[in-house]
Image (cartoon, rainbow, N blue to C red; front, side, top):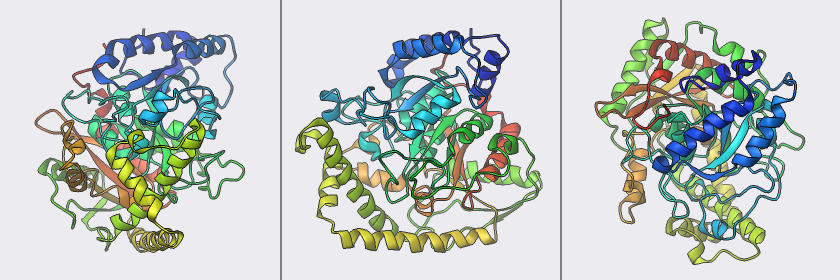
Amino acid sequence: MQNTMMDGVELASLIHAGKASPIELLEDAISRADALNPQLNAIIHRLDQQARERAQQMGAMSVPKEASLWGVPFLTKDLTVMTKGDPYHAGNVALRDADYRAGHTTYLSTMFDHLGLVNFGRTNTPEFGGTITTEPTSHGACKNPWDLDHSTGGSSGGSAAAVAAGIVPIAHANDGGGSIRIPASECGLVGLKPSRGRVSFGPKIGESWAGAAIDGVVTRTIRDSARVLDGISQPWPGDPYWAPPPAVPFEETSSIEPSQLRIGFTTSSDWGPVHSDCVDAVDKTALLLESHGHIVESDGPDGLFDDDLFEHFKVVMAANEARSVTKLGEAIGRTFGADDMEADTRALVELGRRYTASDYLVSVEWLHLYARKIARWWNKFDILLTPVIAEPPPKLGELRDAKLGTKRLREILLFTVQFNITGQPAISVPMHMNANGLPIGVQLVGAMHAEALLLQVGGQLELAESWHRRQPAVRAQ
């Protein structure tokens, strides 16, 4: 019964108007998952029965005021966010083979419930979210619905594939180096990485990757992203830091035409070349923004491509992954051995175990200084416009190649990690389709806590491009 072009806001309005019920929308989504997931491998754990029970209960209840997405089908990425008793594998073979189940429910899962979202599965992710393609040994490659030979990006690739194909309008994602924005770009979606502290990691984690990582969602429309952000951006007791609440709800401001902005853009990187398709996407967007009255200039922060950045980020990432593996080993009752992790993960964890506390603090201090230096640029400009990645979606296997994978990753990952380090909000919007029918996103970066401005500009671009009406080759009918 669902028109697969509908976003979450529209589906929720059907329920509020009595034109649909939560169980009807859920059964439609389950049918789409049954039909499409064998081709995509986007969903790795199905939770149909408990979702049906929740949807049936919701149908007999009055809609709570805060539940602005009441009855909307939803999927959760199998990384970081947990619901007690549900499978949690994080892309790892050892957790899969142990049939590990989460021992607690994270605050974000609770916030998704309060929004009224009906979760019926968990989505594919690379091992521990450590790379930008979703091809884990544990569950196999996730395929891009625009072209099944191509990557969905990572680490939120399963969620992005499911939303792009129309299985659900919204799915959970998280981002430690581009893992919301890259899958959004490669799958033709909206992917907002919120500001540091906007979304809680509680109750058992204060921060992830020294504050570089944050949770969010991937969607097809700006208003869906804004509505979810309104529901998940609240501080919880004990959070180490938090972002100030907006003066006006994000969804309300997202529909307002922005005043004239000063926007800088760059299409080049000191770290490597940028494909002409990605340059074209930025140039096209710059011209469109200029036509809307914004001041658009070729400019960007000095030092954005500091050669030391990846070395210090590697220290933080490796140390955190080593700690994560230790905790997960305790959860399954044994130490993770060499065969329990993929080769790249094992090398990173071993590196993390060798770093000293002093090594870690030196790198965290360097990253803090880098963030202060970069953030000053926003004293002069409102928004930075860049490519998301340096190439169109790569083919499956390229980034997993034992000899060339790391080199290819560094060739592609040129524009996203910087803003995990600074903690600033950044959004990928699907502005371009290349000659091969593959989506190319562009990235808009705002000053700290300026999500509302990014959503406003995103809404302006969405109105001009109507990207939510594009449909991939593999899609719900």
